[in-house]
Image (cartoon, rainbow, N blue to C red; front, top):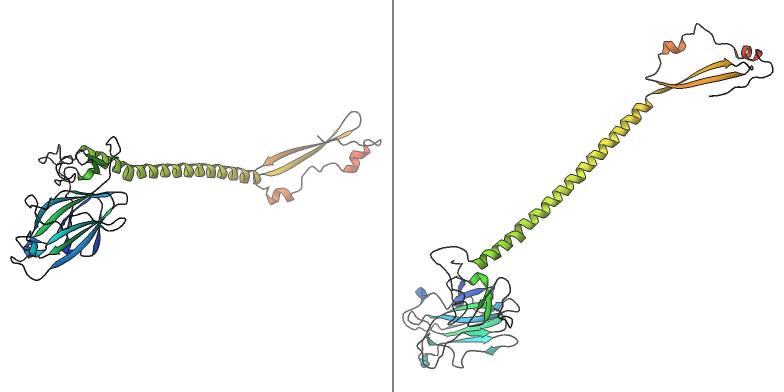
Length: 310
C-alpha cells in the first residue's frame, strides 16, 4: 500500500529557523529551476535546526548529493548534534561532491541519538551543482529483543524503530541498505497495510465509538430519571386528587334516643358522608315532626338518666 510522502521544504527558505519533525521530512537546498548555470557572487550561508519529539533520535539519509568538489570553491555541508551542546558529526572538511562518486568524502547515514540536529550549508549552488536532498526520520532504539512499541516498525539492518505510517511511502526511512520499511508493498494496489489499518481501527474506536457509547449511556440514564420523575408526579397527582375528593365530602351526624327496660336512655349517633352541601331550603325548612324535649325525656326516669355513646 502506498502511504503519504514525507513533508518537504527548502533549506534556503527557513534560514536560522527550527523545523519540528514528527515522523520524517525531506530537506533540499533550493529549487533547481531558480539556480544560475554559472557561479555568481551570491553565496548562500544558511542553517536550519531539526527537532524531533523529546526522547527520539534522528536518522539522516542522503537521497541526493551534488555539491561542487573543487576545493577552491569551498562549498560544503555540515551536520551538528545540538544536545547537550553543539558537536560536529560530519567530516572536518564537510560533505561535498557526488553521492557515490567522491574520493575522500564517504557519504553515509548519520544516526543522531538526541532530538535536535543542525544542517548548515555554505557555497554557491548552480544548476550543475544544485546542492543536496536529505531524508530525516525520527526513531528510537528497540528493546534487547528488537521489539518495537505499538504503531512503530522495526528496521532490521539499522536496528531502529520508526513510525509505522512511514511504511511503504516510497522513501527509505530505514536508511542505507535497509529496505525494511518498503518490503511487501504492492504499489499497484492502494490497499492499506495491516499496521496502518490496525492503528486506524483503534483510532476509530477510541475517537468515535467510545464517546458515542458514553453519550448513549448518558441519554439512557436521563430517560430513566425522567420516566421515574413522571411516574412519581403521576402518583402525587393521584394522591392530591384523592385528598381533594375526600375533603369535598361533608360529614353528617345522626342522633337518636332509646329508652331501655331498666329505665336508662341511650343516645345513638351515626357518622355518614354525603356528596356536596345541603340546599339552603332543606336546612331552613322546619321538620313536621318535632323532636321530644329534653325535659320530657328526663321526666320518664326520675332516678337519673345515663347516656351511653356508641
